[in-house]
Structure formats: C-alpha cells, structure tokens
Image 1 (cartoon, rainbow, N blue to C red):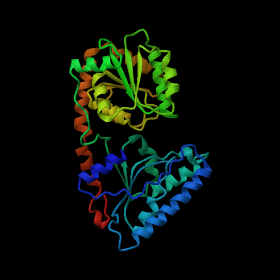
Image 2: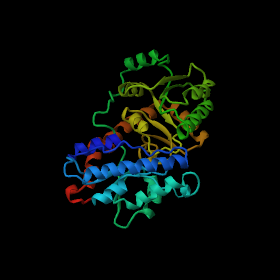
Image 3: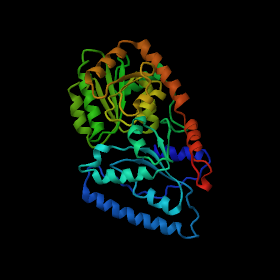
Image 4: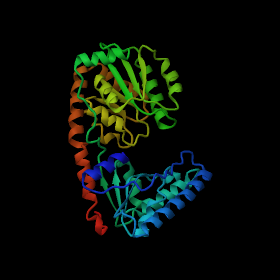
Length: 361
C-alpha cells in the first residue's frame, strides 16, 4: 500500500522521494530492541537534517508523509524532521491502541502516540481506527478517508473462459466440476496464522459438501499449516505457494469463491483483488473489511472469529451458484467504481494543496 500511495501521488503530479529505508518494526515488544531502534533513528534523523541543512541538496520536501504508524512501528523520523523543516506532517493509516499504554509495547505505543499528536493530517484507510485516533489529534488536524485501491495496471485478465478455467484447475490437480474455494495470504505467526486455522476449522464443519480449496501464499508457518489442513484431505486442499501477480490473478479468475476469516485484518488487499477478479467473498467483519466487501451484495461478512457463522456462509454460497455469480459481477463493478487507482490519486491530490507553501487541507 505504501508503494501504491507513492505511485498515486506521482500520477497526480507530485514529486515523491523515498528518503529513508529505516524500519522501526518491533514485533515482540522487546525493550532492548526498542532502545536500539531509537538510537538508529537518531542517526538517520541527524543524517537527513545535515542533508537538508545544505543548499547543495537537490530535493527538500514540502510535506513529510509516513505510512502506517502504530505501536509496533512508530514513526521515529517524521515528527522531528518535519518540525525542523517547518513543513506539514501527514500519516497515511495510523492506529492508536490505548490498551498498549502499559506492558511490553508501552514504549512503542508512546512513540506512536507522540507522532499522531504531531500530525497535521491523517489519511485513513481503515475506519475502525478513527474512534481512537480522533481524541489524540490536535485541533487543527483533519482526517480524510481513502478507500483501499489497486494499481493502475493491475493484472486482472477478466473471468476465465470455461476452457481456461478447466485447464488451470486440472493443472493444479483439481476437478473442474467441483466448486473451487480460494484464499491468498502470507503464512506467518499472529493474525494470519489464526485466520488460516479458523478457515481449516470452518471447512471441517462442511466436509460433507462438495468443495476444493486452493491456497496461495508462503511463509514460516507453511509446514505447520499444511499439517493443519491435512486432515481435510489432499484431494481437497492444494497449496500453491507464492505466485507472481499475474498468476495470482489468473488463479483467482478460475475459482468460484474467495474465503478468508480475516481475524484482525486491517482491510485486506487480497480481498480487493479477489473481487476485482469477479469473485464473491466470504470474510470476517474486522477492521476495514466491511468497506471492501458489501455484505449481501459482493459477498457475506461474518462476525470475526465466529467459526460456525463462517462455515454456514460458505455452505450457503456453495449451494447457490446463481447467487455466487451475481455477487461476483457486483464485486467487479464495485471495485471498478469505488477502488480505482485514478480515484485514489484524486483523493490524495486533494489533500496536498499548495505544497510549496506548506499548506494542506
């Protein structure tokens, strides 16, 4: 998403520069690591300020924009440098979790909160973040919603003709006569792993129905997940590993239904890509998933973490092919209308007004 935002700003005519590859990620709330990250950040800040203090540098920013600030990845650069340069400070996707004010992530939480308090504008991709962010913002700051969007040249080839559909499924050892479920997600500890486990449990509850599952993704928990899904039968579940973008799009187009429990999902780019491919989606209603999946129109939203409701929703659409088809067509139309690259570019451009004068709306 960070790369997409950069591309959309460039499309709108802005000069965008990635000024640092410093990463403040602290996934385990390790205080020693946090101290190390803060020292590294101090060095990066000093280097950048030294650069911006000379007249020889060709690029000096009019606005500083940081993507995704939260307790595991606070912005340790932007607030300081934007203050030094006297320029607006903008955050795209900020999360504030008061429950993290104590415990192992307290330091990261505090740094993230300081950054959010300094922000002049928040670009919000997940409406679930707004209630906790709003009380922290300074009075002059604003929040603008931005719908998640796809690249300008997203490789969606269109719904596959039946012969291509059949060929792709047969290549992957699937039966074209059986409804094909598909999911796309990284395989790592935490919420992704929990979502995969919830999916395996839900599918086990409807094992008497005809279905087969294709899984696209890879990561450190793949072997464990393959064992987790193994009880469903190798004839039902096929792990395809990580695929190139076009191959992901082609495989989505060959499937019938996208399924993902979406436990603590921010919004889910894979869900958006599935709908762009003309697939109805069954997903857990967490974070911003509800602004991507129109419940009852482009798919079905279930209570996040409720295995039975998720299984029942999958069973329902497995039994109603006409409804699946109607939802898939609606999904493709909604993505084209509400989640386009051009629309996102216009929204971002409307936020960054008169950047040379340091003004934003």
